[in-house]
Image (cartoon, rainbow, N blue to C red):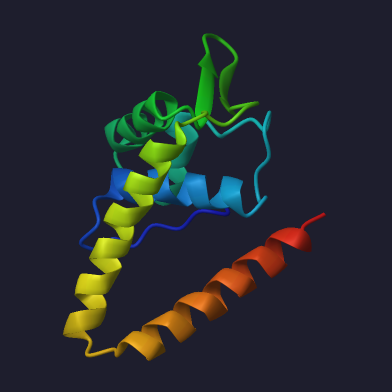
Length: 132
């Protein structure tokens, strides 16, 4: 399975699933229209409670990442949700604020942080361009 769960992580398991699915979509590992395993199949494969998987699926559906069709299953949404630009920018700023706080405690200087971020951004887009 393309998603792994870290039982020792401080991140709740359902959020690890949500983040993992979103990352897989962003990286092209799963594509719009792809069928996801059932809640029961995921729970068995990852040896976790089915309610945890169901909670993750509910969140993914709420965010517009997946669509669930009664009797057919859950699929990666054909179209990703459209979010107003101002809201997108605010969301990214909030995430960056968390990174800045962590980099402060890791004693990473501004130039180092910018270099790491630039390298990661370039790597990310290079990988996306090379997806089949």
